[in-house]
Length: 97
Image (tube, rainbow, N blue to C red; front, side, top):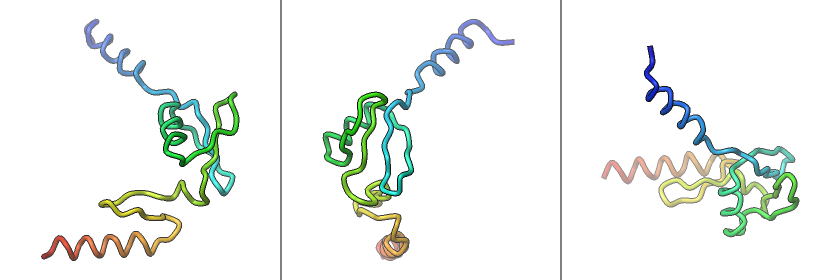
């Protein structure tokens, strides 16, 4: 049996879930939804260009930008699997010494 405070905490946690109300279209026409905060940060950083207001939408500036990730201060392009394997190999070698 749950107490009132436990139910209230669970309800508060559920309510805090950020709504993903901004759409971003990738270069391959796939789309995903993100929070407005993240969307506007990408716009300020020049990663996304706003294309529409309702719903808030944008597109990546460069091709395959959605595939870029940072791994140990190295920018990787997941569209090129060799980048990831080379970075992992270099990191393992550095950790061994």
